[in-house]
Image (tube, rainbow, N blue to C red; front, side, top):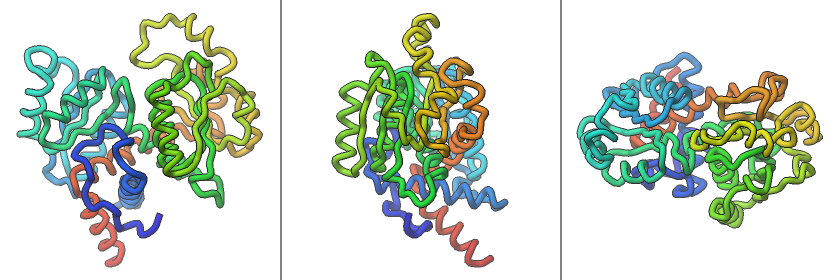
Length: 339
């Protein structure tokens, strides 16, 4: 990236962060820039209170570890406050509609993050809200995970290789994390492959989005069940073999579909022929199902960096969609020049 303290877009082109397909590459790079600059500044022991007295409403229709903790900690580190509105804690879904909830929260809070069961809910929330809404995950996509993932990939790029020349292989089921990884990787011109059983490949809808990205930014997107496509992969990524929206699937069914061919183990990593291949997982993991302990805890794993970068991403998203990103970068630059 060029000047680390100057954004191409001083303010967001859209009020809400619902889907990365709504933003061009330059704006995604802006979000990455403010995320990583703020991370490095805070990790060096400095403070940043750009969101002082700002309030974040966090709506959850599901349990959450990384999403909840990263947004709550991120907001506090930026000088603001986060309210955890878990299922049953407010009237949403009981006596109040999404639209009414959005209007009320808009009058009291400065930004809203929601993790919802159905994508239609996040769209309805954003439509009725007068303040920015961030999609913390739906059954369609997981855009905050996307930003953390792409930051992790950029942190671990092969030496002397530009990001638009790397190969990212997702192994397994076409979860919303798989679709999201494909969308962000192709947005940056990377080569993306989903390696999984044909019945679990990305839909034509998602493939069309990915191919549109490759036409604009370069790179490629493929789906395959041929292990030869693992060769020369720079990043191997997997997710659980059943999403949060498929709990009714019996274990024996998904084990029959995926095991052992699509388990990420030492043998699968060896098929890449790359001694420096990196392993990623959005977590939580079902250990020794989609990934073995030896891989998740081994020298190729960057899954824990990836988890930490959820916090990196959330701080950047909070600053950017509060229209405070350039202000934060200016403050960081000024402090560095003075010291």
